[in-house]
Length: 197
Length: 346
Image (tube, rainbow over all chains, first blue to last red; front, side, top):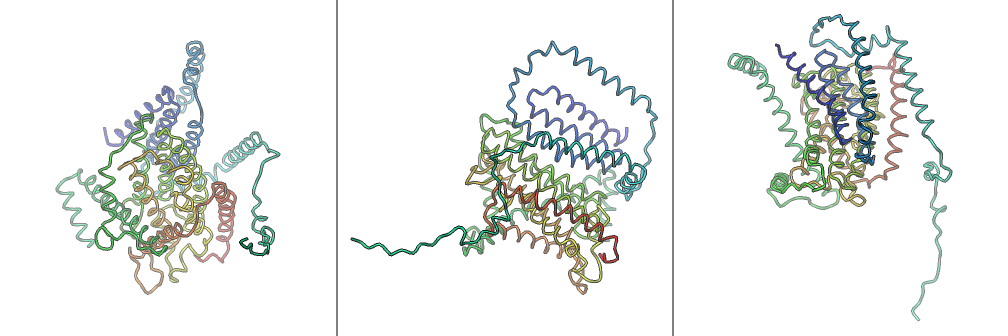
């Protein structure tokens, strides 16, 4: 057992433990934090595969931005935990069925492409980022662009669905504020000083 | 010097075998972290002195000559104070939050080059690593705010997180321009791409000047410094996310904030100001230039704090989303087009 294998099993065990805690933790904030741990462990495993660009991007995008917003929303929620537990036994068979189906699908997909290639080890100055960029913009340019357009459509749809203009909303008009002169706001009144009677 | 180092490494390798590498790396880590922590301590002193003189006061002058032992006295005081844990708080998260704040601020230094040979780890995706690490430091703040079980702490955390996530985008796009200009993600290579015969005219500050300004301002917002320190606006929400903290746990948040400031100052020097390169061709490149440039950026941080009143929250968000992000995206396009023409000489 070499060093890489030990590191792999460490991250894999950590990831499975964290993933289990995501669904078993009673406090939703703890669940999100365990999800963060899952992402970081996954990033560690990708780093072992010499995919440093993907590994760091996973931390940057999912942990640094997406999960922060998740945490943000979950912390704002007012969740009554006892209400969530009602009907647990009633829905358990359906949940187990869905989980079994998902597991079956994943096993069938991963089982067919199970050609276990050994990784080619690259020199230390090999740039994973450059290779990835070249592939994305040459061989995979259409899937990449389609994915980008899909994301754009989803973004526009999300904004269109949630945007509601209020009639009475007040907003600042910065150019108008800058254009204001002293004479528009201030009136100097000349008056006699009052005398003591 | 280099021969001495090499013979030392050879000797260690003979003496300890495979154990030598972790030990030698630990020594190098200490050689980076110890000066960073010392700079953090004396940055607080510099801040009080500089702002003092700007406001025609003297600043700390009682502990030691010219008050030079003041940061040590402050540290000792905080070290011996009791850490109070609020009874309604989530204890584990409450204690771990300051550590989560400080650890990424120190971990980011792993890829920082100090000159062409002095670097702990020459990572090819160094810039990405630093952005990822700095984006992690937000967890310290949000967990501290939530686990304190106090509305002021939570409001401070929410403000801070929204601010950091917004300004990270502008910072990221500003860095994309640097990456395009240098054609590398390696911090050392980014500095070497700014080397030329014209001294400071070769630095990326010249073609990417708007990005330099955006990066410095976004850096101030990222580190929650005045005038963007809404996270701890004491007139509105007492002290923000660290209101329930005391003693060393409280001090860790400040260590993290100042360590992040120093990190941003070094990054600005490396990305835009040519790192350790000399500004004029007749002087040699050296570490001293990097330290000087970083000190100047840090002086700017202190200067801003002494000069500007605190922003209002909606103005801050407007600046981030409606000014900086469109400007940086536009400049990415401008630089991409500019680089295709013969007018690009960097």
